[in-house]
Image (tube, rainbow, N blue to C red; front, side, top):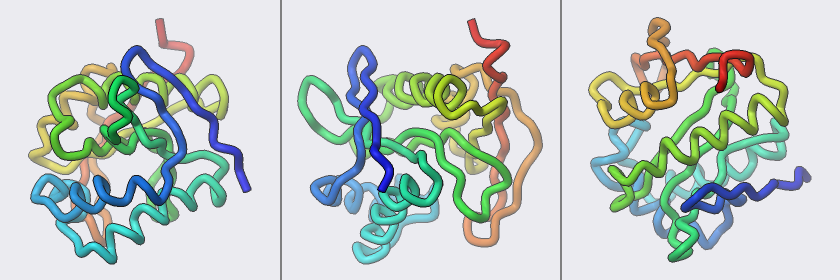
Length: 172
């Protein structure tokens, strides 16, 4: 089993997801806010999504973290590097739990995830995928310096916009 590192940012602790995170994950995935990431879905499907996030660390040796608000201990998001079997290439992805949008947490955690992907995993490039119309996620990608790089058609999620992040050599 892969050991999941813990990272910290100014306001967040990025840690491994656990069963105790199911409540906020299920609440998010059952809400209309999940429409950009394949939802809303049933509680059973939300459990499978959580299990897939946790299992990704074992299958790939990396994955998305629980982005916990350090001051409160509340789950703010699921953010980090991942590469599902049917993805075009490795991605930095972010899902913010209900009530945590608009606080800059996705950008803050995704920056830390990009640093980890480049510095620890040795990635030379990364993408982020956003659903058309998801202006919040598009704005996060732009704040991270990503540029539009075409689109990707997924069997389940449909058309997704590809945002290309500058490689490690371009970071300041």
